Structure formats: structure tokens, C-alpha cells
Length: 137
Length: 137
Length: 137
Image (cartoon, rainbow over all chains, first blue to last red):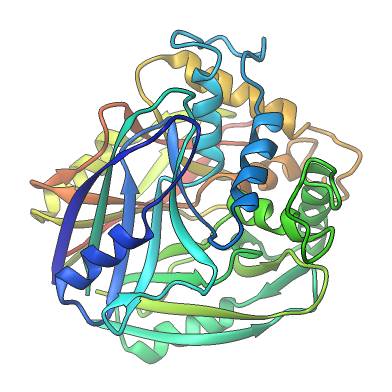
């Protein structure tokens, strides 16, 4: 059995959008009791992370750490057609994930207690991001 | 066909635990000849890596590199409720993997000669970590 | 349904080899209309990335960034049996991906407009790399 749904996620510029509930809804709608759920983001300047879902400071600190590690406007970068955040967005994407695979158990994604599924926007301006959630089993 | 098994991995604090044999056993027990094996870790302060399995110095060097790149007690971090290694553990997790997908061939995970599957504990104290190994095909 | 094919990718030393077309061919050859495609690289000193496929400067900048972040011959590293690029290759692999999962839609991998699938060679000398492309659905 295979079922997939495409989502559109509107981001507010750099930062995290929680899509855990959307992922759960696709799995529940599929009727699959057990199997594998895969989340895929169709872009190269935003990414997916499984991150701590309780304290918002964790996301704030992740963003601060990555901003310091991959500096906007770094003169090392040649590719800056879309601005100082263009190439850093590609680097951050490669350092994180474009796909996540989560086991399905009892009809729901079997996430850990503190795991949330987030789209991490790496561009400073808001974007509409395409995400596909699929289940197989 | 879908088969899954949950493992509990006891870590000794920061460092690597080889779970290659456990992953292999779940695949063999499933009876699946070919398909896809996915390993998932249900936490946000430990992660999974496919790493070189011959020379222990590789794991030592990985740990040393990450310890220097993501410093414990970095004043940049706001989130430190559980100590100076709390936020670094979340950053290291995001920089590595929470899920790994490995092809199954001839009834076994088709790993490269030098690839081992490791749980990488990022907290300084020992933890019990939940891992799910699933196969589909 | 499960179908898999093994590819051999000859790299020219450090840098990127585009395998998007090869992945697409395996999916098309499978006849699968919808499902999940997984790309797996069987090595610990090269990796897979989904990266921007239009401007070659993006790959140049990725390589420059990683070369600066993970320095060849860093005295921190103990493991250097195969030279100054040996341990950096393992670190770069852990910081990127060994497997990628991509949804299949209308008989083709449903990549974003700017997403290409690349093998990233992290060793300075040319290598032959084994890659498995599988589809399930």
C-alpha cells in the first residue's frame, strides 16, 4: 500500500514551522496501521529537522548556532545572485535533511516524546515550500 | 511486507554504540530477501551515523571534531536546563541523522565493507535510547 | 513491489558527480508509477547530497565551505593512515547523507525544480563508488 499527499507550507522567513500535526493527519488519513512514513521537501534552500518540541529556546539556539557557523555575506561565497543569505541557505540545507523517514505504529507516526517535525526556512524572506508526505507498508 | 522491531540501546555517555549486528538480526528475522531497511532513533539528543567500522580512532576523531565545533557551555546558547551539554546535544543531532535507510539484498542489510551502524550519544551521562528497525519490501 | 539496481560512479577526486539521470532511469525502468525511491551510497568517505542544479558556483561554494570547516591535515585528527584528506572525508560524510529518499510520482522521482542528486567525493584522488537505487511501492 502506498499513499502520498502534497502540502504547501508558508514560511515567515528564517525560522521553524511545525508540521508534526500535518504529517500525523496524512498518516491517519491513509488508514495504514504500520509501515514507513517519509517526509520530503522539494527545495534546496530550506530543510527538514526532527527537533525538540517543548522549549522554543532550542529552535532559537539552533538558528543562532547555524547563523554563526554559516555567515551571511561570507566573502568565500561566489554564488550570491539572490543576496547574502542565498548561498548560506544551500549550505544549511546540505548540513541538515531534505527527507525524513519515520516508522508508523498503531496508525500514527511513532515519534519520540520530544520529537517534532519542522520545516526550517533558511532564506530571510517568506517562502511557500512544497512538502510531500508519503506512507508505504 | 512490513516488519519492525524496537530495540533499547544503553549508552555509556558521549560516544558510539555499534548496533550493526542488531540491525542485521532484525532483517534476518524478518525473512525478507530484498527491500528497504530503515533505522530510526526516537530522541533529539542522540543520533545515528553510518561510520567507518575498522579503526576506533575514526570515532575518537569524530567525537573530538564535533566537541570542538559545538562547544559545551557556549554562551550563545540560552537553553541549558539540563547542563552545558544539553543544547550541544540537540545541535549535533540536527547535524547528523535520526533515520537511516539501507537496501536489503540476499536477506541482509547491504552495507559497504567499512560501514557500521552506530548510535552516537551526545549527552555526557549514560542514557537508554529507543531505536526502531523496520523492513519493507 | 520492490526493484533495485546497483550503479558504479567513477569520481574525479574531490567534487560532485550528478547522478540525477541515472536515478531517473532506474525509476522509469522499474515501471512503478508511485512509491518511494531510495538512493544509498556504500562508503564512509563520500556522500550524497540533493543540491542546486543550475549554477555550478553553488557546488564550488559548498566544496570551499566544507574545505574550510573540516581542514585537511588538522592536527586534531589521529586517524591519517591514508593521508591528510582521510579523516576529513569521514567527517564530511557524517555531516551530509549516505541515503536519500525521494517520492515517486507519475513514474519519475518527484524532485524540486532545482534539486539534483549528487555523489560528493571527499577524497582528493579519484574513486569508484558503489550506489544502490531502489524503489518500493
